[in-house]
Length: 489
Image (cartoon, rainbow, N blue to C red):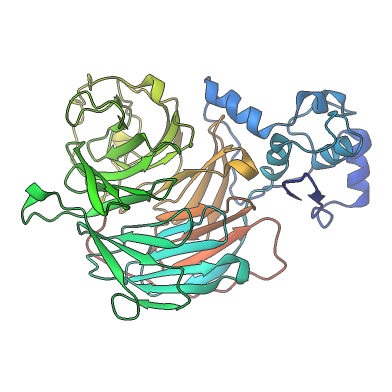
């Protein structure tokens, strides 16, 4: 079921529902069967979030109360698509069309779990994969120096094949500018390279076929010290970059002035992830191997390198952060094998807890997580909710909120060391889908901003897409490549 911005519904569920089932829906109040099916799917809630965000999520993804009350049959949640369509045609809501919450209620039922279908297959590990903001482009970065940009609207044709310059170990991150003209990519180096991807040339060989301008993030007092950048993001207006690095710092680069505008020695260990909190660019979230999430307000630095607040709760280092975009909530993936949901209004001014009870030695790059640590709880956990089931090992695995337009950010999804993609319900913690295909860790994955389509990329070199509904083609038969390396990031 796809719903356009104007509220016009395109019914694609006819293949799954017979006429008898439709009539049963209209007159008997029956349930639509298994719209988001997945092997080994578990809907058992881990918790119910007793917090404002649960209500906000429901407001974004539930139909209007009048529509639910006025529909014939039992009042059930979720309201079936047939009832939603009948309600719209009968103008039960009094609006004569679907609201954005109605659209999310429809689309969020149909998870991208069918497939997968092969997008690309490389001989090196995939580290990064992201849709552009409008979903027309998709970026994938590989350890073997290739960064490919696919034109989604033109059958996933490779629009740009970039061969990265001065690569150290791997492409650690990429970010596409809001206007989709420029791409930046990072490595274990203080130089961030920027490429004009608007040129018609498909092949982009650094400084041979095209210029890959180098932006130097080294501070003047660093001398010859070299560091690597793990995370980089464009600001919403495209004028700045924010980056997290291996020298425990956050950097902000002014693209218009072409110079580094801010360096914050922000943590006591690697800053693995950093992002702008919202469109204003004033708030920055950071996560580090020191187990802490920090909030930075650029409008009111009271003291040098002092955060606006600190959030404790992870028992191990943080691999990734994703902002809800409202300047209040964000999620983090941690090496303690959990995702945590945060409300920055709960942050404290300093760290007050000492994790002195840890009695094990562990390195996530080559060791399994200690069984005795799985049930440990942080004595000062400030998180709103915790999500478990996936595994965060070997690499900086990423997690995200599902799209606002199509799901109301109702879900959280993540890659996993066990070669799968996990999807959780924000409000209940239930594991609503597990996507199985890959044979190596899934470091990154991305949900299309408008359609029920998700793309996962893995260290097995495969980039594959998952969809709902089935696209009518048989899933591709993929021959697996085993790639072994000694060191991981």
